[in-house]
Image 1 (cartoon, rainbow, N blue to C red):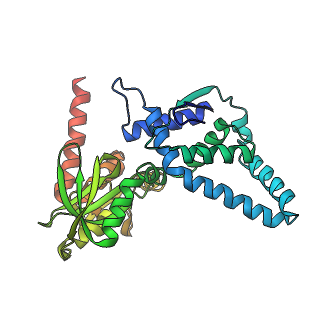
Image 2 (cartoon, rainbow, N blue to C red):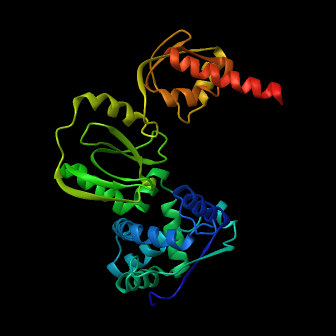
Length: 328
């Protein structure tokens, strides 16, 4: 197959929606606002191909060992077993693969050697190109969001990890500016949604960058200066909730009603971790923004006791909402 040929992949509606959802999350849209499916598929297939094909081959090898027949027959049976294992689940088989998405390989994401390897694997496993790539995408979407993001931004995450490991400065560029920082951590949010770069600049100012919002990152041939110990607490807090950078407080107290306690148990997303509880009082040490955003949903069932400035913020928030309803 020539790498200039388009590859058509037949997918279910569910898989198509997951693809377009990820594209929108990463902001990879065309000028007309439509999802850039070709760019997304080129990147995912290129970055995930080696890991996926290795895991496929490894699985066949392990099945061969279990079967234990002669080499040729054992491999044939192992390939058939793995092929059946990778068939869509019963619920997915009931969904027609009525979505047809096309990817046009680029010389940057696919070279002829890689396409020849895909040709060989597809023929060996008795799969069409469409089936092979659909299986690859299904495997990709079995992973949590933050792992998919690390695959999609493989080169970027690799550059950041290298800078952290070698203790080198990093030049990062966003849509607004470019800055040289000392990288400290590459961290995922507790909900396993997104990845963040936690860093500080030469003056000691702390930064949190969402990976998908970075345009580029390059290692600077400059050793990282000694980290400032006064920033250790910031990074300790940021590692717990990297999506919330800014003001941290180690003495946040919230009073919950019984209904508030029930809500706290069941509302998982963005839930802060209490450092201690005493009856109706819950103490937290962390991001003020996280506490405000999380408990603003509780209404009268959660009242901020400390700090006072945060209590005033929530008071103003509810007061303005009440006034808006009165005026309507």
